[in-house]
Length: 136
Image 1 (tube, rainbow, N blue to C red):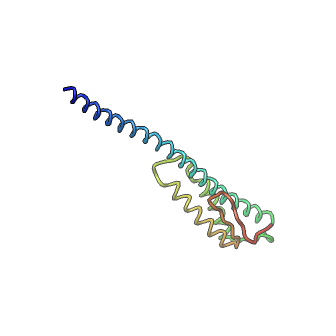
Image 2 (cartoon, rainbow, N blue to C red):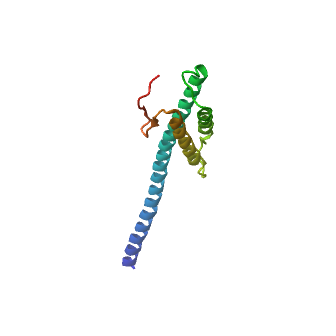
Image 3 (tube, helix red, strand yellow):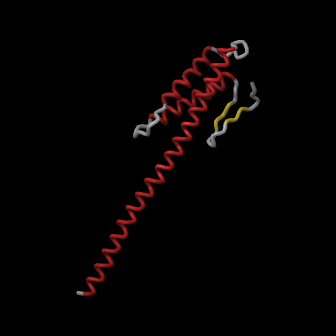
């Protein structure tokens, strides 16, 4: 009987250890996931703000001096679309993939804008912009 108690105690301790480990892992996973989500959210927000800001600046430059910045109507419409799309990216995390899809649409439209106006502006993942052969 005493031997059975020792064996059962060992089994019970193993089971309790597994349960505690699972809970600890779950808690750490949530914290790590939250940190990764915040980081990715910040990166996406910075990129959307960059695209929006570039388009707003180009629209303003064109409005102030259309002869110096002669963008086509199609380019101007695409710039306005980037601004609108960037502003529509959801700011709250949801189960739906709408934020990722909208951000992808902003990226594609922004690439089209930079191609149309001949301004090779690129946003990299470190949050730094690069413009080759571009000055005001």
